[in-house]
Image 1 (cartoon, rainbow, N blue to C red):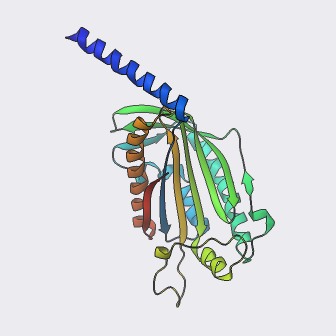
Image 2 (cartoon, rainbow, N blue to C red; image 1 turned 120 degrees about the horizontal axis):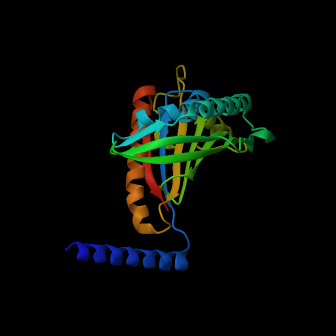
Length: 252
């Protein structure tokens, strides 16, 4: 019985490897793309700082996905906070004008040696080491951007990007029709927002582009889990800071 199980496992493994090689030979590397859009009851600057804080990862992900920052990570988080603050200040200075300055098109701050290491526990039982490279931290067309790329971990490739922008600035530029205007989603606007004092509000795009082994079978399973993680993160952050989740979806 044990020999049969071993032979069956070997045959299944060989079949999967052959399928993967055939798929990648015909179509190239497959990647899954998932995205969450939500509002937070924070200014664009504060929202970017919240989305960029690795210390919030564990409390904003599902119970079966436990994140522990490894030794040495606190220093890297401090350096990251400095880059985020620098980008937030650039965003604040650019928002004083309806027409975006040339510097707003792409202002990137890069620390090529900045990496953060974690332990990821699936089901709080199986520890998996994970290291993320942080780059870039940038301001692009008025959106503050932070991208994490897996340097070491369970995926063949993994890239997680936060995009944050002040919602009132988006609507102001959309109404003005200025260069670089980005229309706010209709569902992001409340019926009573035309009058009265404006509460802080920012728009967030949380995106992941990843592949497990470069083929679609495992990537389909990964997409299900990644959408759950983004949904949980959006729900936790909107409960804490106000706002609402607009959508969580897989993109083509």
